[in-house]
Structure formats: structure tokens, C-alpha cells
Image 1 (cartoon, rainbow, N blue to C red):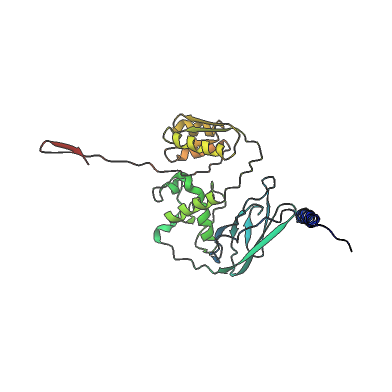
Image 2 (cartoon, one colour):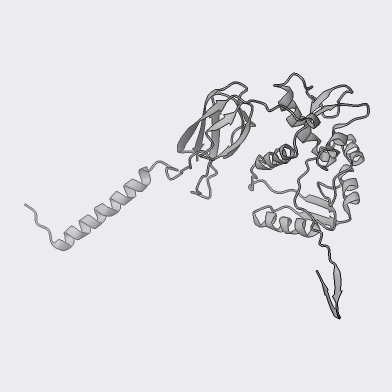
Length: 316
């Protein structure tokens, strides 16, 4: 029998403990610490036929040198785009039923998945109001029609086309608009509500692609309104703080001059303090530039009334 001192035992156990820790570390599956949330929003478990919805997952950061990959799958309906980011736009099918939406996230060595079931219920279309049924006249354009809706902008024509086509697919009283530049006199077009136009642009903002900060940034040229200039300058600062390493040029030259530069290909973004005109839309399209409008704020107007009461002067 061999005997050892207490000191020797402590040394042996210390060595064994270190070896144990090293063995656990070296054989842990790489990336096992990656976790994902449930598919968000969790409360959204029902959609109408044909309805669009944005779904996403939250992924806590793990190794800063590893970029997670994402793969979305659905057995009914359609995912717009490649479905390889943490956020997707899903379009429900035209028929009612049950849908399983699944996402798998990985870091190259480990994968984790989650899914949710969504019930697709039939959509019962409300009867359109009289002012939502519009018969196209000679000389009409979607831009011109857009300007007459809720005092909106000519650039809202994509919203009209999109909502009108959703309606025409389920209501044969209306004509579909395959090309926003081509509408014919005599067509019956469904006119969306003011709220529907607003929701359309909100959805467009929700599905902007993720930015790959590893790709070197190119120069961005912005020109236009002096009113919007301070806001754009601040946004540019925040954009660079997030990781954009390209040059951002912002010129305060007025809205009209900004649109001229954009249509001539000299600017990437226009700062505008008014809606775009139909003529400007035509000019830009003829030059091959597609417009993507974003409303970033509203001007405030304050009225001041001067009054005088027995020698007391003031404003209200």
C-alpha cells in the first residue's frame, strides 16, 4: 500500500481538476452557446388569407467574430425574398388552413431551431364605400389619382397599385394594375383608405434589408431642402456611429434643385420639404430612377395673436 501526504493529495486533485476543466472546454460543441427567442411577435397566431406580416427572432450576441446564419421555412404561403436574415416578410396563402413557420439559426458549428403554428382564416372583404370605386378617365395617371386621396402625395401611387391589386384578386368588379405606368380609361380601380396607404409605407420600412457592416461603405450623396438638412445631418452621424465607413455628403440647395440632381443621377437621396410633383416623377422615371419615398417628419405651424388690454400687451 502506498501512502501519500496530504499535500500530495491536494496537488493530485488540483491537477485532476485542471485536466477536467480543459477536457470539458476542448470537447464542447463549437457555438453551443447560441440561443434564439421564440418567433416574434408571439401573440400573432392568426392571419387573414392574403395578409402580410413581419416575423423575426432575437439572437443574443455570442462570439463577435461569428456571424449567425438564418434559414426560414414555411409549408404554406410564401416568404418574400431569400429568407436568410433574422427578419422576414410572410404572405399568407389565399386559402384558409394551418401553417408551420420554422427558422433555424446557426454559427457554422451548431444549429438551433424554433417554430410556430399560424392559423389562416378566410378574409371577408367589406363592401367598398362609393368613393372607393373609381372609374379611370382619359388622361388619368396613378400619380394624379394619388394626389386626390386624403390630400396625399403623387408618390403614393405604389400604395394604390398594391392595395388595388389585393382587392381585384378577390373582387371581379375591379381591374388589376399590372404596370403602374399603364391604366386605361374605363377601368374600375379600388381606391384604398387613407389608413391603408399609411400602413403600406409602414410595412415597407419594416422589411428594409439588414445592413452588412463588413462590406466597405460607398459614398452617399444627399441634396435638397434646407428644412430637412439638420435632420439628415443627425441621421448621417448616427449611421456612421453604427459602423458605416463611407463618406456621406449632404448639400442644402432646396427641394427643387435636389430633385433635379436626383433625376440627373447626381444624388442618391433627396431631402424634400414638399411632395414630389407629377412632372418630377416623370422626369426621374425617364432617366431610369425609381422613387422610394419615406416620410420622416411633419412641419409645425404656430399662430400668434397679439392682444392689448388696458395698457397690457401680450401674445396668445
